[in-house]
Length: 68
Image (cartoon, rainbow, N blue to C red; front, side):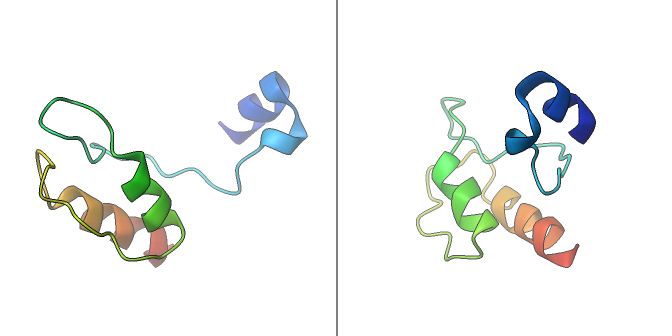
C-alpha cells in the first residue's frame, strides 16, 4: 500500500504508516470529522464528540494509533 502511494504521488507523499479501520468518526449526516482524526494523530484532546453517530469510534481509533 505504501509503495503504491509512492509510485502514484512520489516519495514525498509516502505516509509513515497506514492504519486500516472498520469505521471513521462520522456525524449523523455522514460527514467525516477530520478534526478528530488530526487530534488523534497528534495525540491531542478529542474535544466535542456529541454530534458523532457513534461516539466510541474516536477512542477506538486512538487506541489503535497509539498502541502501535
